[in-house]
Length: 173
Image 1 (cartoon, rainbow, N blue to C red):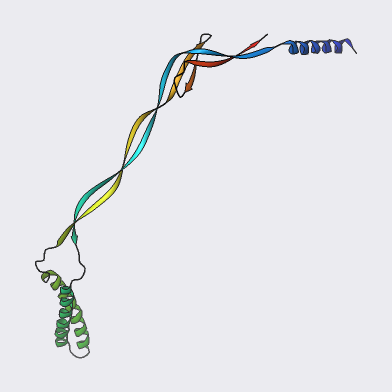
Image 2 (image 1 turned 30 degrees about the vertical axis):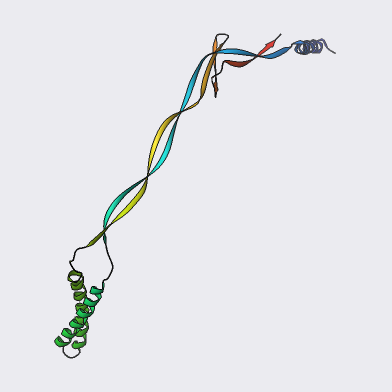
């Protein structure tokens, strides 16, 4: 072996030996908490509410019996009048046109004048809708615990206030 390699080998053995000889150990120490501050979170809740109100609406009954009678009577009268007016091949067209116009006029007249006093009927209907409102509130979510270790502040969050904080210390020699 050359002297250059033997020197490197010797240095390597010295470093390996010193690494094997060095020891360290860890221990848990407890440090007193100097301040615990509550931590709050903001929560927004959705609150559905039902709101109801009364509405007055007109009652529609569809086609009344008076409307049907008026339409039939108006159609018959319009057909007779149209038949009197027309002549030749135009007589048929005049009869049909008179019947159609008479039906429309008769139905309108019966619905306007034939329903008694002519006043509409109303009823009160209750309508409801869901309205969402939002409520914001503060909720306690934990505590910020502060302690001093060797002149430095450390902090730990927890669910409850702590009296001590565990700290792991490692010692080497």
